Amino acid sequence: MDATSNQPDKMASKTASSNSLDSSSKSSSLGSKHGAENGVLRDTPFAYLEGEEDQDQKNDVTYVCPYRGPVFGALTITNYRLYFRSLPLRDQEPPLVVDVPLGVIARVEKIGGATSRGENSYGIEIFCKDMRNLRFAHKQQNHSRRTVFEKLQANAFPLSYSGKLFAFAHAAAAQPTTSNANAAAVSAGCDGWAVYEPLAELRRLGVPNDMWRATKLNESYGICDSYPAVWAVPKAASDDFLRRVAQFRSRCRLPVLSWINPRTQATITRCSQPLVGVSGKRNADDETYLSYIMEANAQSDKLTIMDARPSANAIANKAKGGGYESEDAYKNVEINFLDIHNIHVMRESLRKVKEACYPTTDDSKWQTAIDSTLWLKHIRCVLAGAVRIVDKVETMSTSVVVHCSDGWDRTAQLTALSMLLLDPYYRTVRGFEVLIEKEWLSFGHKFQQRIGHGDNKHSDADRSPVFLQFIDSVWQVSHQFSNAFEFNEHFLITIVDHLYSCRFGTFLCNTEAERVAEDLKHKTTSLWTHINSSLDQYLNPLFPSFTHGAEPVLRPIASVRAVRLWKGLYCRWNPGLCAPQHGCQRTRELLSKQDQLFKHVNELRLKLTNRSNNMQTTTRLASPMH
Image 1: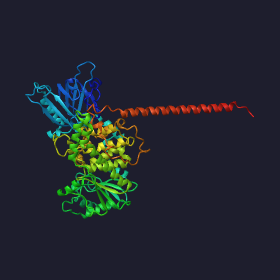
Image 2 (image 1 turned 120 degrees about the vertical axis):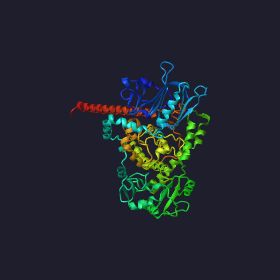
Image 3 (image 1 turned 90 degrees about the vertical axis):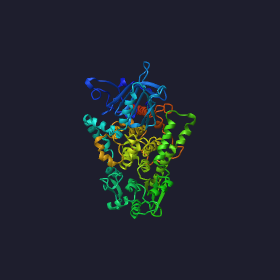
Image 4 (image 1 turned 60 degrees about the vertical axis):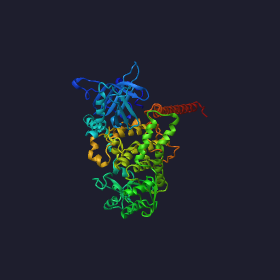
């Protein structure tokens, strides 16, 4: 829902504010926990979350709305959100509401100075990670801008001011009052931290078996600090051998199992680039190890390496000590380059998407503007790469090794997306949560650096929308196969929203090792707990039962004609581009009506059968005796 659109009076209804970021809030009143100083209870215009506390309030602020113009109202800043609510000029006029979690904020800038004279020329501009910018005008004479700016800086970027992210305060405040609820959630299977258990997932895939084994060699994260504690590796490889192989891979990220085809034993393994360098160094252990992976699949005498990078980039990496596998050195191996560009290209592409979608658009140049961002081209490349992996594994029964440079960005996109296409389990809500936990979180995608949680280094070159591209790619597939996914679009948007919000611990830190050290499992709440406790709103009504009729393998069309801009996400703040989305609710209503009609038809058939039986009985009774 557009946070800048007209909304019903939140003060009166005391319900949670709009969009997925604000659901399941604790209370809509400052009573009891919030602001109950001296026994005075104050009404508030939104529902406070556990641990959410007021930081600043201003009653004379103007929101410079790009669609309705300047709107006068009150601004509240808490340790979790910025909340603006207009003061209606006429009776019955619904207020305009802007509700933004502070984690969404990328940077805050002052506009205007002491000599500024134009209307609304003095204030604050806020640049957000979710495609929108917000501008608030303040009165110069009361210096209200100073405290607002300071509170925003301190609470939106707590890590830059020796503070902690809101997720910790949220979980700490919830623990005393929700222990029973948490116990109920665990017993009901809703505990998000228990969604993914590595050994259980490996057992689901049929590992261990004759060719693959599980190992806790990295349990203390001493071999590779960005890899998970549990790996699945070829049975032929000893632990000492694995240690040697790791030394020849960037960041010690040696090839380990992501997925195995239970029918053919063809596998998807992931790693980082080999350290061949300009001189083309060879490593006998690494070459032998890849042969073990190939030999673990009796269906093929070939191994395919999918290098996510453009070939020119892979060659350039040799100058930095990296590179790619030589087909001369690695026997029975073929290498393919998938032409997916690096994090810097993707960051610039998304910036152009934002310029095209918000705040204003030129209809006559809309398609040209979107095409010039190259965003859809990049999405197509990710999709096409995943489809090629699926073709090798499913059609050719060939095992595939996937890597890019360090193996935590483009590699995760490709392994996760190809697994989603190959395995119907990952298209369920629970399976998709497992997929993210496994391929993104446990294998060290650097969420903290890529998103910039809680720090004010908005120009950091490490920031990039890599995970967002994956979610976009999933949406593209779900758009082509509307009944193949148990979850709906709202589920995907909720994940993206909380990628930024810092309300949950799921996407905090860079690696599994860091999350263990921070004890996030006990000190924060999982996003999956939040989602799994209210599943109905995230379910796709068109999805068949997982055990009845799920398509085993999906092969989406990866062409420019089929890939489209996800307006429901990128354009949701622009009312001129994104109309309210009620499709899922309407589908539910129609399916419910269909069920009612089927039930009515069955009742009529039963009545007709009973009537026919009664008539036959009456006829027999009335027949003359012979």
